[in-house]
Image 1 (cartoon, rainbow, N blue to C red):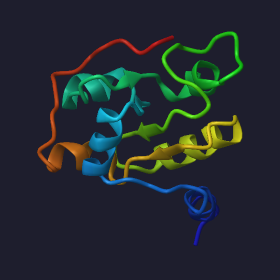
Image 2: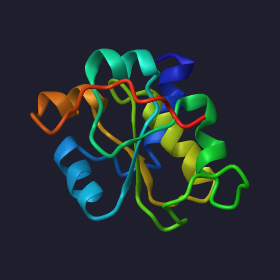
Image 3: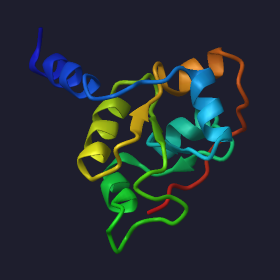
Image 4: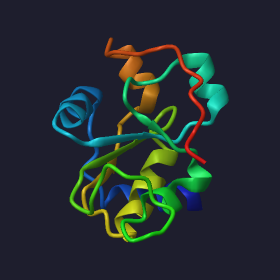
Length: 131
């Protein structure tokens, strides 16, 4: 096993990861879905309606519950589901959000591609990320 595999396994040990249908139910119940994919991926493959695009390099600053650069619309208690292309980078990102104090942060198993393969709503993408 490589070091990154160990890092990923460690991150996932703290998460209650969700499948696409569970993520949709969470979103319908008020969870924040955060798409950390680069704009090129969102433009090429589409986006989940109402998911918030925040590229990975800005994630902690935009979701720090006490930070001055945070976005609105969530609290420390809001469930946050992070998604990437296939569910790898999102696991590491969700673990980092938990470390910031978002205890209900997790990620989408299989990422955006699993969501799309499940036949769930997708719209054409390319929405600029929140800087």
